[in-house]
Image 1 (cartoon, rainbow, N blue to C red):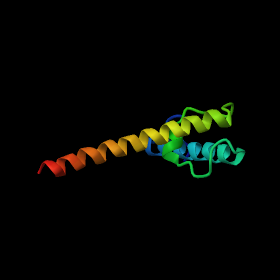
Image 2: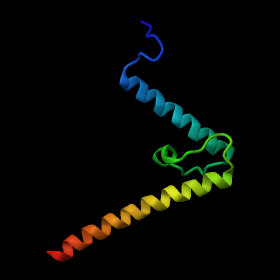
Image 3: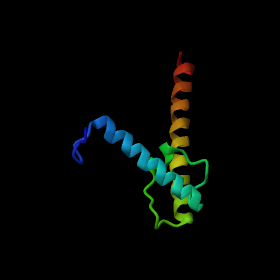
Length: 86
């Protein structure tokens, strides 16, 4: 049974979006624009395309990674303080 365009289930649309993102990530990794260890979660936070230079992509990736580490550190310090206050 065929479904008209843009009328698929929410679940199917989400799966297709994940596949498109995975293909785009793989393409950028193969071109050498992004490192091989770039995760899908990191890629989804990046605003890059085929015209982005390697330097711009790496700078954006560093920004995403440092923000993640900063959030982890903030969470750790809050939890640490909670434990010390007991």
